[in-house]
Image (tube, rainbow, N blue to C red; front, side):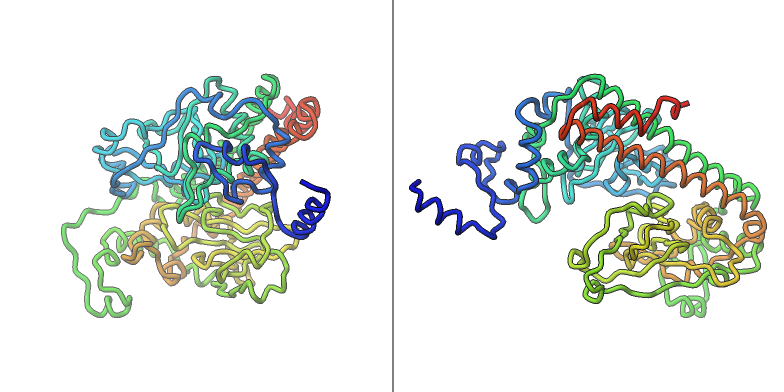
Length: 491
C-alpha cells in the first residue's frame, strides 16, 4: 500500500468502531469460519492477544455433551417427588456458580431412560450455550443423583479435578466472558457450537494456582452451604413453632364452591378453589389476627428508562431473587440499555416474584452505595408500614414455608407464564407466633446474608486472580488470592 493510500485509509477509519484483522485470521478463527464484526470485537481481540497461543478449552476436557430434547413434560415437584420421578435442571435454576436444586421441577421417568446423556454427575461443569449463554455452574457432591440437565447447557468433565475450578473462574472472568461471548451465533436465539466452545483459548497456568483456585471454590461452597443451612433451619424452626412441620391437606375427590365465591374472586377455574389451598388458608387464619397487607404496603412506583436522566441504576431481574437478597454489588446499567418499564425499589423492601412461585424468588433489598435500584414489574414490592410490627427478614422465612407456597401455587392463572395476583399475597394471614418470635428469624437471615456475601467476595477474588495471572503474573495472582482467602479462613 502506497503512503498516500495508507494515509487515506487511516483517515477513513478515524472515528469508526473498526477492528482490522488479517484475512487468514478471519477465515480460521472458528470451525464455522466467522467473519462478522461481533466475532472480531475489540474486547475479544484484546483478550486473545493477552492470553496468547497455547491450549484451548477442549484440551482440558475428558468428556462433554449437550442433549437435544424433543419434548419434555414439566411435572409439579411435589407430585414428582411423591412418584420418585427424575428432576430437571433448567437454566433458571443456576446462579453462577451455584445450582438452586430446591427449585427444580420433575419430568417423566421415560425421559430419564430415553436421554442417558442428559444425566448430571457430581463434579461436572455446566456451561450455558443458548440464549444469553452467560451462566456457569459446578455440580456439587451432594447434588440429587437422579437429575437431567436442560439442553441450553453443555455439561463437561475435566481430565484433572483442579481444571474444573480453574475453568469456572476463567469463564466468568472478563477475558473468558469476552472470548465466550464472541462465539455466539448471530441467530434469533444465540447459540455456541460445541467445536467453537472446545476451541476457546485458555491461558496456561501452574498447578499451584489451580490448587489455590480449588481451595477458594471449596471455601465458596462452604459459605454457601452454611447460608443455605441457616435459612433451612429457620424455615424448619418456624414450621415446627406453627405446628406445620407435619401438616398435609386432606385428599378430596371433588369439591363445591358457590357462584358468589367465584364472582368475588373473579375466577371460575377449578385450580383457584383447590381444596389444598382452602385448607391451608383455614389453618393459617386460625393462627393469625392480621394479614400481610395490614403490616406492609405494596409499592407500585414505576420507573421509566426515558425519564432517568441518564443516571445509571441497578437493574434486578427475577433470577436475582433466587438468592434471598438482592446483591448490592451488582454492576449498574445505563438507562438506555433497559428496554422496559421497571418498579422502583428501596433498601428494606421485600420483593416477591408472582411468576413461577415454585422458584420462591423472594428477596430482601439490602443497603447499597446510593445508586437507585429498579426491578422487574413481575415483582410485588412490599415495604413495612410505619409502625414496623414485622421485619422483612421474618416475613421472607414465612413466605418460603409450604402453606404459603400452596396458596400461591393454586392462585396462579392458567397462562403460559403462570402468575398469582398481588391480592393473594396481601390477604395472606400472618401468624401471631411469627410476629412474637421474629427476632430469631431476623438473626438467621442476617447471618445467612453474611455467609452468602462472603461466598460472593471469594467468587470475585477467584475470577480476579485469573485476570491478574493474565495481565501481570502468577506470583501476583497467588499473592492476591492468598490475601483474599487466607488458610485460617477455612477453619
